[in-house]
Image (tube, rainbow, N blue to C red):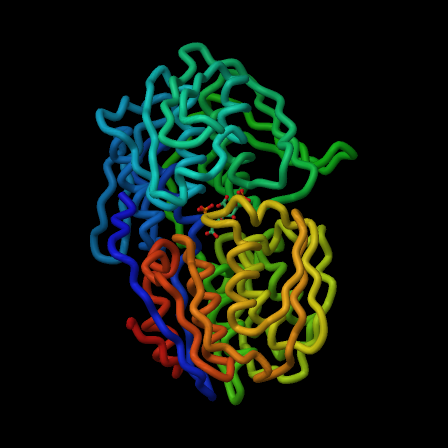
Amino acid sequence: MSGHGDPVPMISHPVTGLTGVADVPGDKSISHRALILGALSVGETRVTGLLEGQDVLDTAKAMRAFGAEIEKRGDTWHVHGVGVGGFAEPDQVIDCGNSGTGVRLIMGCMATSPISATFTGDASLNKRPMARVTDPLALFGAQAVGRSGGRLPMTIVGAAEPVPVRYVVPMPSAQVKSAVLLAGLGAPGQTVVIEKEATRDHTERMLRGFGAELSVEDREEGRVITLTGQPELTAQDIAVPRDPSSAAFPVCAAIVTPGSDVLVPGIGLNPTRAGLFTTLREMGADLTYENEREEGGEPVADLRARYSPDMVGIDVPPERAASMIDEYPILSIVASTARGRTMMAGVKELRVKESDRIDAMATGLRANGVTVDEGEDWWAVDGLGPQGVPGGGTCATHLDHRIAMSFLILGMAAQAPVSVDDGGPISTSFPIFTDLMHALGARIEAV
Ligand SMILES: O=C(O)C1=C[C@@H](OP(=O)(O)O)[C@@H](O)[C@H](O)C1
Ligand SMILES: C=C(OP(=O)(O)O)C(=O)O
């Protein structure tokens, strides 16, 4: 359950000299998948470094409702799976809280079992589009009945005799790709998923790691992923790398706050996730990769970010969007303190996240004295230069963790404090955000 209680208004004051080491939590995408694939395996999967954010805790609860046993002992999460085809029918509604990843991946993995389940979420998740997942699940033989416009609450009746599917994903979405692949596990024969633009590939990497037969080919039609259904997945030991999407916040805070020097160790730099860091370096950020290495098959480095007073606006290449899709809110904050215009195109997916992120950021930036232009699939921020943003505004976060964290970082580098109406959702992905930023020298308070 999201457990989202009363709004938590917060204020962030201008500061200088953020310094220290920022140990950010585990990767959210990999944490969801570790629990789901553990539940679909035979044996005991052990997970360390799991993100204990509300989104992932809601996925753990859902996996228990389908029959997996999950418990934490010491620092390790133990998942006793039921095997592919072994899901039980839940006797309660599955509440995925605020999490698009949770609900869409779980719908996928139950859709080729002869069971039904009803899904719901919080006020944000219940506005988000689900037809993008239920359309391909119907091809396997599953049925979905939800609210109008394909919204939650929604019941999925799994296919009793699933057939394999060949599906071209119509939008750049790792959640849709993953839902189809997870459904493909329960269907006999080969399921083929084609994506025109590469999105985060954790599902493919982890399915292989759990023993599935899966191949990926780059062809003219796109990235062609072929999965052989009905495998026996084998339990694994997983060390979850730290989340680049969470690292983005202390990294960007250091870049915009005078006198800062922050080390963010052990960050996964999978190329399908690292677009923000490339973009920041192109804008002139003093951001270096130290101690580059491989961990669990993923490239990892310690990120060192220092105050960067010579940042300039750039055109962010649209083909980079999928590799930094969750980072546009915080990029727009950095852009507001750079010199010149930053153009962000090819980003209409931002309109269907926890909030309409273009609208939420544009409105909040304007309330703090920044000029923003926008169209359906693009937006542009006119930078005011270092310490040039007046600040002083209050920003609506619309149950969106990334909007809340982004504006709290603006407050550190603006001329006057910046407020958010609700910092509560931060705990969905980055429960230690406020403590971690305080340890670096930030001044964020609940008001
Ligand atoms: O697969 C995943 O773990 C995710 C995919 C992305 O969503 P879309 O697939 O909707 O782009 C991203 O925004 C989300 O935070 C996590
Ligand atoms: C979009 C996000 O998550 P989800 O889609 O899982 O709610 C996010 O964390 O920025």
